[in-house]
Length: 251
Image (cartoon, rainbow, N blue to C red; front, side, top):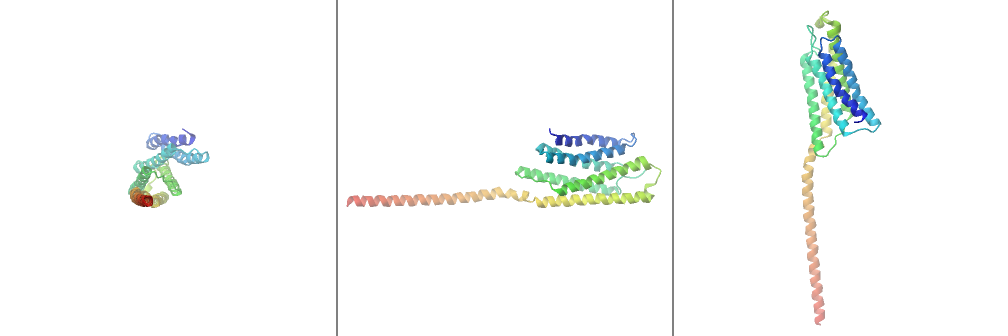
């Protein structure tokens, strides 16, 4: 296993630590620790790809691990900020239904893209990733990181000393975070639709082998007919020559 693959694997190994520290209310500043670990995990997504391309260490195993690690990391972060709340205060993602809808859309997009790649692989096609996917992932990382940091502020800094719903500064922060999450979701929809449209040949290619086979069959039939005609013409010429020779001999 090369260095980029080890970095990618480390991103998966960091996930249990993120979940533990985020949910461990008995640990002081646990959500801050979880946020820092999450940021480190996000950075490994860019480091492993950079090293792999620079040193020509791109492997099929690395592509597999990188795809899995990215999806699991972002979905873990989304579930944590949606399911978790601050005791006696307020939910991290407000309103709660917004977080649920955004998470469903992001999860659906990843399933659809993964299914498309599987279909393409079964037909011998390789679908390359695009820059839009990386931009989408970056915005998602930023959105989740900011929400995790906001959860830390609500839990460990403000606690129950401030009424979150009536505090102007916290309300502004909530709206900013809401806008960032919506932008991340819109990017998810756009990049997913663009990826499907750009690779729509995957669905058309399933009829190609049948058409080719029919065309080949027709060509073979035509070629066979031509050969038969040539054989018949040759046999006629041979008969004619034979008859001519016989007539000459008789004379």
